[in-house]
Length: 215
Image 1 (tube, rainbow, N blue to C red):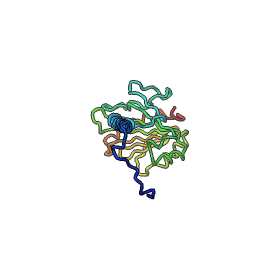
Image 2 (image 1 turned 45 degrees about the vertical axis):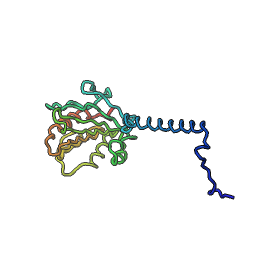
Image 3 (image 1 turned 90 degrees about the horizontal axis):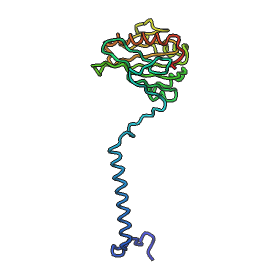
Image 4 (image 1 turned 135 degrees about the vertical axis):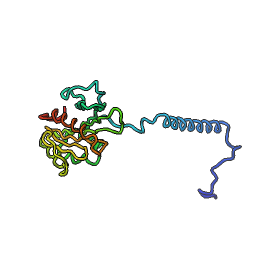
């Protein structure tokens, strides 16, 4: 008596009915269509591969749509320097998704009860390689802002009279004012755009003086 593994389960082609052959062919065709549909979708629709969850922040329009800080629109002022423009978009991050923007450093800010981050990039109108990224942290109150500023401050920086304290190093400007802790980081670290960074910092310091949070 043949064992389980010794039995023959296959049948000769002549023993397969025409109905079985048709059904088998239809199954193969259906599988081929499904596979082809999947391949075409992946090849023509790549948006899902690069999706960013924007549920935790808002993006506002260009410079013509900027409003005042109190109206909950872009808080970034015009740099007032020829050739430079204010951020075209402004992103807001909450404590829950702060890691999306500053992964690896978010925990430090959370320790000091950060309430949010507002981010924007100033740009040069004719030189795409010249930009200034502004990280504007709402620390909830001035005590938290000063504490976070002091924690990250550099002893080698050139001190600036901005808000509750500020300094510049390598063209990068840091300061705290009111409940805000602000960092202005240029793409050019040779100091070429320091004047622009200082102009932006001065205006932001005036806006945040006495402001308890970025509304």
